[in-house]
Length: 356
Image (tube, rainbow, N blue to C red):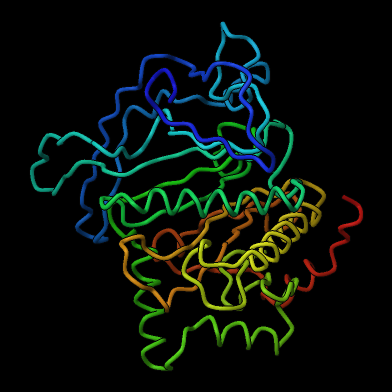
């Protein structure tokens, strides 16, 4: 436990050793009163967390809150020691397990912002990237995501767990140190609600999970597969919304990372690393992207129709050209892609990784 009461978990490929006191940037906890308000037109909840206005924003390199503490007078989030990855409760959470009852808002349903927000630090090296990690450390991250999903899913209040990484100031990152986050919700979010309905309908109609047909079709076509690792593959899906959108999937149906066997996780890690390295090598710059780990709900039910996958949405559509949401995308939810997935998959296959 940190001095302000937040939890910290350290993970390592070798036994973890802590060489300094467990720190916190401030011993006093941040007072959080998150709430949810119902959007009657869209039919979904919107999170409000006013305390996050004061969160750390692009600090100078000499103060990196995600690096191990080296000056006890200026503590960061992490101790010194031997470990590879760290997970701790977000100091400025959008959701908290025991959110207080908010004041009523006339005409709009409002409820406490119940959930959990965690930060996942990928490495002690502040200059690295997820794709630049050794493949065994990428595999460790899969284990970390699986472990946190299982742990958070044990709380009956939490119904869905979403690990993700925002990378690059272009997508709003405020800390450069390689890290991601995990949000756990007390409800099934809109994207996953719609996906579950679609996948359930497919399985009922065809008698098998959608993923089975998708993997077979993509392998047979051979046009959009970037790398086939046997138990896992990467692909620019034929319905990609972003120009270089990349999915990493197991080649058999699974609902959670924890459902994968050791050999499958090894293959998954290798293909994920390959996909991220290709995106960085594509234009010779670190590709800004949003990466999400799409697993099934954590309500204890069985979800044989769910397609476990990692979705990577890159925000460069060409060298120096960012993808912005246009009117049709923001106003109507109808995405417009400037290039065919087959063309962009071919470009990613042809990337020379040896130059990295």
